[in-house]
Length: 160
Length: 160
DNA sequence: TTGCTAAATGTAATACTATAACATATCAAG
DNA sequence: CTTGATATGTTATAGTATTACATTTAGCAA
Ligand SMILES: [Zn+2]
Ligand SMILES: [Zn+2]
Ligand SMILES: [Zn+2]
Ligand SMILES: [Zn+2]
Image (cartoon, rainbow over all chains, first blue to last red; front, side, top):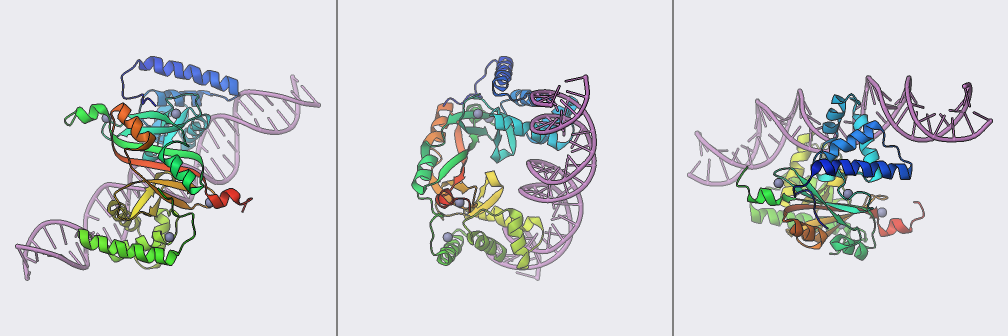
């Protein structure tokens, strides 16, 4: 339930260890973390912020890894299917997963001022949504839980 | 916390009373429920299902109320601002509010089989998301809470 | 090795969602 | 009536995502 991302941390390490975990996970599950996919994950990991598909594509293009939209969307499909990234529905944007490997129902805290995004872990069947679903006899398969607001830094900042 | 919408009910009445409530609310708050806006609300109310902006526009166009995208988006802006409708972020679609008048943080149960949508009331500061936000020092202004899954009917149906 | 198959990539075209910009019309004060 | 604010009409464009099909690559069996 910790919402990483608003606290400063060793981000270079953050990227490297996550990529290593992704390599290991793919080896174990017979998934192929191809150059395009790996680079896409690396790009997303470079910030605790959501990137649009076309933002991602622009970086991939600079690296000579492809220029047409499907290049980005295919990489994002792979990363989200594998659980390495999530889509932020409220922003039409994508972010690397901060709780790697766990089969989880992510919840996001999105700062509307500085655009940083923190991911908190929840479980689909807990909380208000789970209650409502049980009461209605609804079987949840996936949840979208996002909060828009101000992160701690931006609450203090006069205007920045 | 009841998730209306999966149960059968007198829908003609459902539409009529909600429109009357909207009329009253607008009169009281000096908002103008113009013909386009009122018809847009009526169209959304006609189903417990989310409609895309262009779906709405198609119906408005048939009624001679406008053909260009801004017509639909302006009506939707008004309806969502007034609290008469909500956007379902996960579907890029819009639905009439089922808990009229209340200043609430809606949560949606979306059936991926029959496309019906039920709205449950929650409050932004309760539940898992609220906990996570408090722990992170995050100030919530708006929440997006959506569950994808199967409604009671579609769980039973063999394949339909 | 060769040939087969499935997965991944390259590329063009198109569909879907949403907003910007500006002209015109309507309406409620003053 | 004049004026300013709100609402509408209309064109163009921006932003997001998928379809379709050709080509290449990787994995595997004969
Ligand atoms: Zn995650
Ligand atoms: Zn911030
Ligand atoms: Zn109804
Ligand atoms: Zn259903």
